[in-house]
Structures are given as structure tokens and as C-alpha cells.
Length: 85
Image 1 (cartoon, one colour):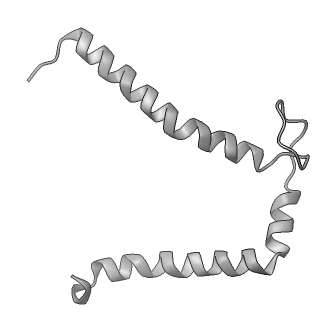
Image 2 (spheres, helix red, strand yellow):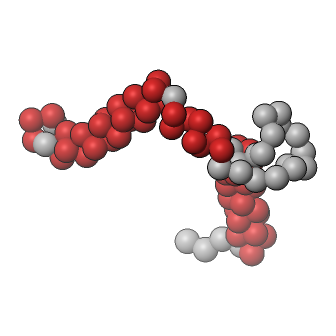
Image 3 (spheres, one colour):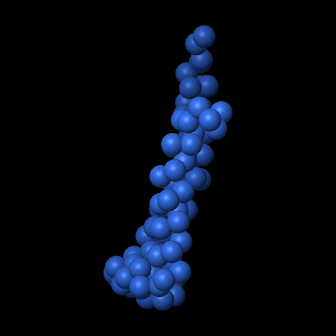
């Protein structure tokens, strides 16, 4: 099956817009994770890693991260195990 050149262009445009709609907010959130100030302003004044240090120092965050890693490591094993099918 062959699409017309116009249909091909429109499909590529729709795909690009959909991907931008999904990934652009994620990129902005990731960029704000490195923001130097506590408030979210644009443009970002500076970049820092201090928030990651504060998060790692928090026992609740460490516990949640460890639990997420445990679940993520078990999921492929359970998905491929014949007992779970």
C-alpha cells in the first residue's frame, strides 16, 4: 500500500507533534531538576546538583528509591516465569 506524498507529510507532522507533546514537558521537568533556586522561574538562573544531594539525604526518598529498584528488578523475572503465566 502506498500513501500519497501529502499523506506521508501529514503523518510525519502528526507524529512529530505527538512526540513533542509527550517529551517536551518531560524535558522541562528534567531541566528544572537542576535549577539553582528554589522557585521555578524562566529563564533558569543557574544549574546545580544540590537538590539531588538533599533528596539522597532524605530517608524517605532513599527508601522509595530502593523499593522501586527492587520492584523493577523483580518484574522481568516474574514476567518471564512460567508460573506467572
